[in-house]
Length: 483
Length: 134
Image 1 (cartoon, rainbow over the protein chains, first blue to last red):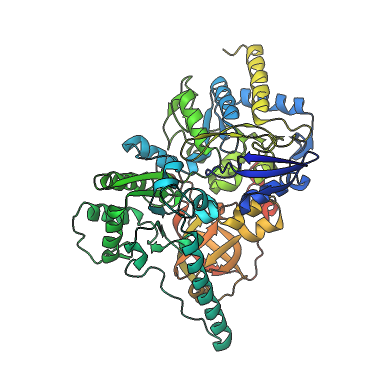
Image 2: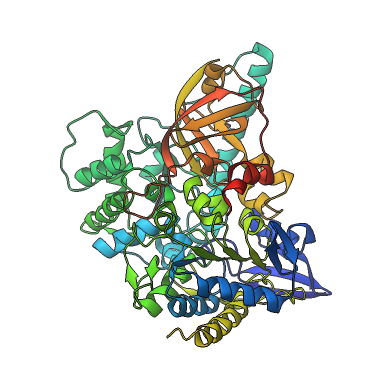
């Protein structure tokens, strides 16, 4: 039995690096300091039912087992035969593998795009437009006394974010609000039990309290750490917050602009904005101005709804306005554990963070044109290589129809709808469990991923698979006399 | 049968995240992702109970999932579905020049579909994508 400490978690952009994993006979038997998602991953990663363990190639419509060499050769042929292939995924693998992927994309004149294109792509476009006043998570943990999660549900997507970096973390200058939260939670649970009991006794639905009241709670008068959640529905995170503001769907832009007016001491000449009373917004603006160090974490609720990058422009502008009055920073809640790394590697190697098109022989970047969903929707790609991602699940139907009708190569440790539809499946090792490497946290701090156990036979690292494909591609191109 | 108009929001849930690690072909994943959370008032407007099958449709497709009663209310007129294969059957692929489709704030209609079954991943892939292959 071997306990490995300070393990970096291969789940979300919070990249917790305090996990303790117990390994016995090359199998993980226990993991401590995990969240529900990472616990599920560490306890199920080796389940042969959902693991790709042998290379597969589609023959006569069926996926058949084949040798690794054969699968890699077939992949290289597909990529060399294609005139406009897409290389997509990358956010659940190491920076080293992404680097190999960029080289492959350049060699075959394809498009390399990562999952940020359907995640924080609009945030990146906005940051390129207006810049971003941000900080590391360590600064926030120690100093932030006002924490806002806007259109983000960390409880569901980044389960330990609050505990490690914000409201429930014990910083040097800011204490954890855990005890207050537990007291409040007991109150909420009591109310829920009461309403359930009354439902049973009276045979009718009990009236639930209104979620966003007209004013801030008394706690906001004190100098304790405060947590505000803004969302279109009451999420689990909203339940943890000191205050929840329910904004109407697709109206975040209006709400942010109204707050900007109030922060600049201008008047909002209406009673409510995006379903929120202006009197409440005035209090929120006062709280923002009155804090010593505020932080606005925003989720894909802003990037995926109407306005997209303009919502982020507005949020960054609000942060900039607030910096005339106090100290305020803003940070996107990056999803997959190395999606920030995918942007960073892509930027240092090609100049652009995602949606990079090498078809002209040099890198071109024009999201909306060279981004994966758009290329697929226009039915322009004639082959795809997917690494550690599942676009068949996560892309809209029309894009997927065009993805699966052309040759599709999937490099993935697990069985997914994408591997089920693929023509070549290359089983790989889990980064952060069976393979080491580097990943970037959401605040762009690089952290090492550890190798905890050996991968199953036939499961190479993503990096090695890509390098082998690249090797075959170069040989094939030389044979065919392609420059 | 009553058909209601809602604003559809998609997103992550902790159960979707955890059951994804049990395997995307697992029943756990199906039970937690092929669902649509509705406000209790909307459930009664459609005339259904929690666990009934419903048809969610937009201008871009239809999908059959199980209805769930939302635990955190009120959000009348807002329906919520976890990210996954099911909800993507009804999402518009248009990105308006940003690379990002609108996964949130979508106009949708919901109606009871007692005669239909929720398809699992392999059935859904076969029905919607298999015949598209060359």
